[in-house]
Every structure is written in structure tokens, then in C-alpha cells.
Length: 544
Image 1 (tube, rainbow, N blue to C red):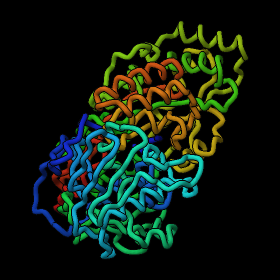
Image 2 (tube, rainbow, N blue to C red; image 1 turned 30 degrees about the vertical axis):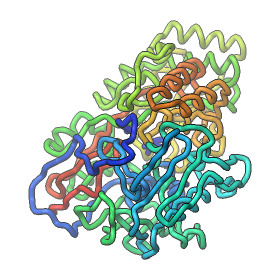
Image 3 (cartoon, helix red, strand yellow; image 1 turned 90 degrees about the horizontal axis):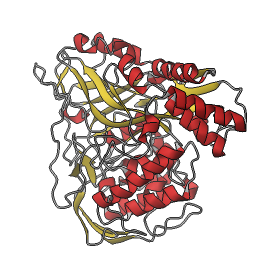
Image 4 (cartoon, helix red, strand yellow; image 1 turned 90 degrees about the vertical axis):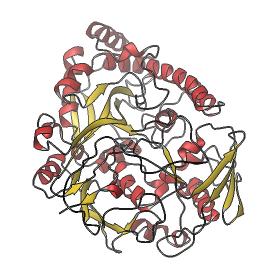
């Protein structure tokens, strides 16, 4: 799983450098679609894979892909993203600005939550204000940090939100943010019904949304097993389902999920296990996909551990990076479904470059790695076993073993993987600063911007900054990039920020991931995988 979400969380951000605020088309076709055959059954249920959400299903606290996949199905916000990562207007009628600092937002009237409550401007402003409060401890609260009134250290009203009418509100930011409209399709910005505030805990177990699907019943979520969704018949958006619902099974083994797909017991699988990389195309000759997605994978060594701070830590991080033979591992383990990283973002983002100064630290160099490790040992000898923690339910064992073997053989130290049974357990160690060694991590983009890879994972105050990196220079460059006059101008500062990261290496980039998926041609057709690697479930037609 990806933490969105890190840890693939949040779990491919493509595309748009700027958003057309006055007109977006929906449901664009993406690569990897399967035409299939057979008569579609509009009431048929699509079965697919997932993982147990880390937290109750509150949109602003669902920052990993297991829960994110569900929230995206249950809620619509001002925008959603089509298969290519382009923003699509949903509740947004108009989003207007003259300075990228103050935005006037008009919503479409007539929309309702599944409990019948009308969606108004206050449905947005109240939800955003609640999510931003420190006492509510929401994982995505930082998405509101640039709105006037936000305070990371205490509860404070978002004074930058003003309701003008039932269908209109304004947002005033602390500083210009060129990519703010792009971010409005992210789950943290969805509206919430008034019942949410009466009992947030109960809501998290049985969320009431306004999206293409809703919970099949109050007991639809069986923890650590599955969740059952059915079509929202009153849905008013552009993602109108062509099926009767989804059953998302929480697998603890990708191999088991793959076997179920082979046996026709699972309709759509969005994560082929490494053991099947050599055979998935022949196993599913007419129903497979291998396409680029905005997913970045890395490992990191937290700054709170001995040997990984100060000059010694910087030398060791660089030595570790140089000791990993990325090209060999992506070829042998992933067989063309991964690409060695050249930065901390993704090549599918507009503005990406593979020519950053200092990116040679991501190339295998045995002699330089050994030299740097010795320099670090001269400061303080390292006699520990280097461990890389990973979640065993995510299909990571083979590549973690390959990475630790590469480190071990290059540096002459003992290195090994440390398996945790589930993603939730692995993430808890990171969140609570209880790692005793390194950890795998990853990022699946929330919205199409270079910043979305850089700020949430290594920026000051981010709940996903698990390495506990703290650089004033880095944070200043991020701030300059966000307040630039355009997305393109901002990217120049983000490139400078990444060149600093290539020196500090708070995360050690490994590779970019593709979405590699399969589906049962006998059971479903019209299967497409989106910019963020998640299938477009609403478009899937059931033929079984």
C-alpha cells in the first residue's frame, strides 16, 4: 500500500500544468482499457482488491491508498480527476481568481448528500475549518495551511473562508499559490453533512457522502475483511457508475489476490505481485495493463536515530544511496515495471526533469560508497545491523531483500529487511517515531503538481515527514515555488529544492512505479486505470 498517500500511503499524477477554471470535460479515456465482450449487467457488483484503511473513513484523515480508494468512491468535491489526471468540474461551477491569492468559488446548486441534506457553500467551509484545527489531528490538515487563519500550533478559525451565499464562498490565502485550484480535487477538500459533527466517530465507521457510490448498509465495512458499496442512485456528477456497486476485499497477500483473479473470483486487481511479473501478460493476455503512474518509491533513515544525524548521517545516507544498484534491481526483480529514480517526484508530472544537479548520487558507485562509509565510521563506528522495515502485505519482500543485499555486498556491513505483518503496523512505527532502523516509503500523488511530492513528505510540519527532516532552506524554496506567478515558474524553485534534497537525502529515491494490473475478461469489460493507478471503477461494466 502507498501512503498517499507514503508507504503506497497515499499509493500517478499526470498532466495538467494549469487548470481551466471555466470548463473541464469528464471521464476521459485512459490507457489500459479492456473492451471485453458480453452484455453489461448494470446491477452487477465489481469485486476488487484493497487494504484495511488505517483510520476511520473521515476524508481529511484518510491519507493512504487503502482508505483513499474508498473515500474517492463515496465523495465528490469541487473537482475530480479524469483518467489522464486532468481536473473535471463536479460541484464547482466556477473558480475565479485574478491574483492566485483570493478565489471566488461558485458551486452547482441542487446537489445532496445521500441522507438527503442539501450541499451548500457552508458544507465546504465548515468541513475545511474542522479539518484544519489542531485538536482534530487530521492527517491532511496541512492542505489548509496556506488559508488565512490557519495555525499549526493551536486551534484557530480559517478566517480566509467566507460564505457569500448558499452557492458561493471565497478563499483568501496567506500567499499566492499557483497550484491551489489543482489541489481542489483532493479528498481533504470534499464537503461534509451536518451529521458528521454530531458524532465524528460514528461517521467514520459509516460515512455519508455524495459520490457515485454509498455504503451498502450500516454494517457494510467488515474490518480487516472487506467493504461493500452500492451505486448512489441520486448521484449528480460526471462519474456515473455503469455497474451496481463495488466489493473491495482487504488482502494481506498480493499473491492470494492474484490467485483469486486467475480463478475468476476477483474482477479487477491493481497490483500484480512480483512473482507474477514474468507471467501476468500470458496469464491475462487480453486484460492486463502496465502504464506509468505518479508513484515514487524510496527508503529513509530517520534523523532521530544514532548514526543518522549531522555530518555522519549525511555521509552514511550518500553511501547507502550509492551502494544500491537500482538498474539491476528494476531489471531482475521488477522486469520493466519500474524505472530507476532521478529525482523525488515522477516523470509523468508536467515540469519534471531528469537533469537535476547532484542526481549522480542515485547511480551505483561501489568505490565512492565505501569511501564515504569509512569517513562516517571515522566519526563514529557503525556496528549495528542495518534494517529496512516494510509491510509484508504489500509485496515488498523481494525488492527489500535485493536492496539490502546490494548495500551489504557493497559496504561490507550486515543489512536485512524487517517485515511487519500489515501496512497499518508498519505505518504506526513511522508515525510514532519508533523505528529502530530504516524503512521503505512511497508517495502516490494527491493532485498533479511537483509540490505535492515534496511538501507533504519532507516539508516542515507535514504529518508524512517521517524522517523528521527539517531544513529552513528547503522550506523557503518550497514557499517560493508555491507563491510563484505560475505553475511553470514555481517548478524552477522546486527543482532547486530537489537539488538540496540530493545533498541531504532525507529520503533515498529508488524508482518510479507503474500500475501493473489485470482483470477477468470473463467477468468485466471497459476497465481503465487512472493517473493515480486506481481503476476507474465507475466505468467498469460487469458481464458475469
